[in-house]
Length: 158
Image (tube, rainbow, N blue to C red; front, side, top):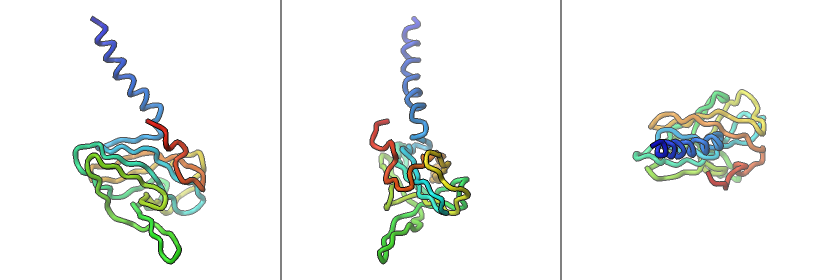
């Protein structure tokens, strides 16, 4: 009689334990799943945040902007190469249909945070909020080396 209840508890407990193990690498809200959020260490005024985003919901979601308590301003920005110089310019909104994924990565689409209030030190974390048409998605980005090209844990399964 207690066996089905015990089995049900075991099935429920396993995913929760797995989520705790990767809590710093995954955020989810409004049908969106954010995986491996990271940024680079910097003493400068601007940080670029990178993250994999999947819309696992049933409705399209529009990414509308971003913010951080550690920055004066935030936005979605795209990489542009002009006259031999790379820069990141505001892109406005980005739609994400159900079942679609999007990777914010160096020299592509990113979250740009301007007016940092403190240096970002390797090994630390940066609180970020992704603004969407479905509501905000708060997450914590790992601060990697200043020269990093990817999240230090990218490529492993979750």
